Image (cartoon, rainbow, N blue to C red; front, top):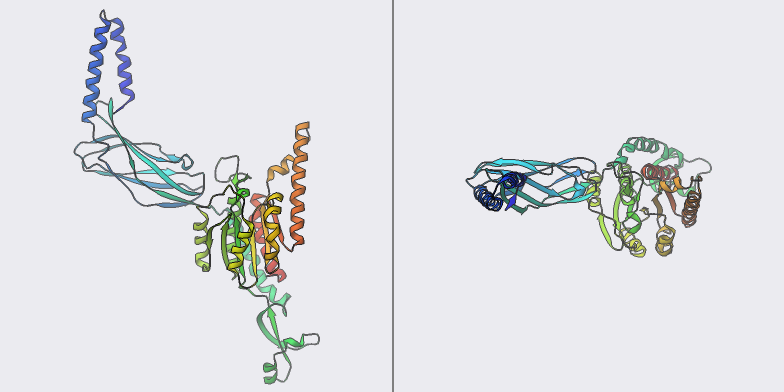
Length: 440
C-alpha cells in the first residue's frame, strides 16, 4: 500500500477538529478510524498494479548527443480502470524525460508511453525497473509494484570529425592524379609502359614488349594503393583521463581520451577505405577488447561504430607485449600501424618502448595522442606564486612529452600529438602526407 499527498493533507485537516473538540482523545480516535477505513476502501477499489502486462517495442540505437525515444506498451487485463502513474527508470546518465507518466487505462485497453533519453555517455544504456502506482477513486492510497522489463539502447560514438572528411577526400583525389606523375618509376604496382630514355634503370626494361616493338620499352611503377592499415586503440588506464570540452553535453570535465581517439580512428578509417586501403581495427589493454577484420568498404564504418560503442577505459596498465603480438599475428606483409594512445613517459618506458622495434622494423608505425589543453593553459599562469608553481609543473610535463616524442621518432615512429579537437584532422593529414611522399 502507498499513500498519496492527499492522504497527508486530509490528516492535517483533521487536526483542526481535534484541537477545538472538548473531547480531543475521542475525536482523534474517531477521525483516525474513519481515515483508516477510507484508506482501506481506496486500496481495495484501486486496480491491481501487479497485473499489468508490460512490454517493449524493441531496442534502439543513437549517436551520443542525439535524443532517442524508447517505447513502453502497457496493457490492463483486469476489469477495473487503472488510474495512476508509471515510471520507466533508467540510469541517471541517460537523462530520461519525463520521469513519470500519468495514465488512465480502462480494463482490456493497451496504451503506449514514450520516454526520451538524452544520454551523456557512450555505451549500452539499460533500463532498470518499471514502477506502476495505482490510486483508488478517493485519491488517498493505492497499490504499487515494480516490474522488470529489460531494454537496451546502444549509444554510438558521435563521429564529430565527419565534417573534415570532404576536404580530405578532395586532397586524396588530387593525390590520385599527382602521385603516378611525381614518383613514377618507384613502387611495386605496375602503371604503364613507355620508351626507354637515358638514365632509366635497365632492370625496368620489358623485354617482351621490346621484342614486339622497334624501340626499347620500360615499365613504370607506382606505390601500392591497397595497403593494409591497422588501427590499434589503447583502452588502458591512460585512456580514461578527461580532456578538452564535451561537445555533446554541459559536462565541464570533457570527454575521455578514449572517445577522442575513437573519433580520430573513424575519420582515418573512412579516409583510408576511400583510398582503397584495407583497414583493420583492434582495441586492446591487457587483452583484446574488440576487433574488426576484413570488412568491406561499405560495412567498415558501421562495424567500427558497433565495435567501439560498448568500449570503456579499463583502469589497468596496458600489456604492450601482448598488444604488439596481437597486431603482428594479423599482419603478413608491410602495413601502416596507427596506435592511438597517450604520450605518458612512465607508461611508455615500462611497456611500449621495449617492444616497439618489433613493429617499426617491419611496418610503418604512427603513434597518435591527445594532449591536454589545460596543461597549455596552466603554463601561461604567472600572476601569483601558486600559478608560477603550476606553470613550472606544466612546462615539465610538456618537456617530458616532447622528449618521449623525440625518442619515438628516433625509433622510426611518426608521432601525431594534438589537442582533442585537432587530433582527427591532424592524423588524416599525416596519412595523406605519407600517401603523397610514397611511404604508403
